[in-house]
Amino acid sequence: MVNNIFSEINCPITDDGWWASVLAEEETQSLEAMDWSGKVEESSRASSDWERAIALYRQDGIVELKVTGYNRGGLLVEGEGLKGFVPCSHLVGLAFKPAEDRRGDSLSVYVSRKLRLKVIECVPEECRMVFSERAALAEAGKRPAIFNTIHPGQLTNGEVTNVTEFGVFIDLGGVEGLIHISELSWGRVSHPGQVCQVGQHVKVQVMEVSPERGRIALSLKRLLPNPWELALARYPVNSIVPAVVTTLAPFGAFARLEEGLEGLIHASEIPLPPNKQIIDVLLPGQVVQVRVLQMESSRQRLSLSMKIN
Image (cartoon, one colour):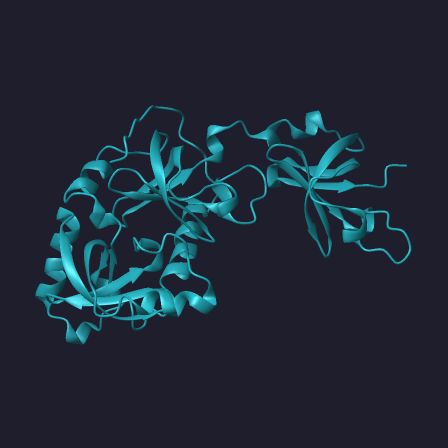
């Protein structure tokens, strides 16, 4: 079991709509094709089924259900009067999201298998029941205890259980929280796998808690100073400074001034010899001299130029 140690700090300030976007993106990635997977046809479900599901959710109980099908987002399960969906991100055997061309094969092996699950979402008015295999690894009753003690602003330790395109899931000792990709680093992150790996132990900050949805939003970057707060003072417009090329793109190159402070060198700002392309003159890891063209700290945007003369 992961050891949770909470300490008080100032509650973080989140951007407007941050939490809503986290939930929306997670659901888009995990619960596609909900018309047949996560949703239950209300006309075919007795009211006692929902009562039992709600009781299981509130008591943090464990139930064993049979896998009856799958789609690209996860598994359809049913049994004992219950029917719902298990997202890929909540399957123990799928630590990483399978590639598109192999996802069907990875999920097909689950059909007819029985899984020990916990209800992590039960929304009768939306006819939705969502289960988690990973949540069932923790003893029954653990989730309510954690939700009663955790709140925004706390620091806690956890273990990385899954890395997806939109973020990293962290086991907090019976409840999983999500570090959205935007909260992994002050710098640009192309994929969460660049920052975290499954099995890694990390310290995180709690940003938002939603007990009614069973969701906890976490941050890794807010444990570190925000480099953008002093960026303009450290790197005034027109100053010439060294930068490390991090990524090449058709429209230019990204370069890092310091950890968490990365900007774009547009293609028009890269001197190119005749008949040469960006990949012919720049390489990731290369140190170049750049001029600061524009700094928007509030929007975390930085424009650079290699035309320094």
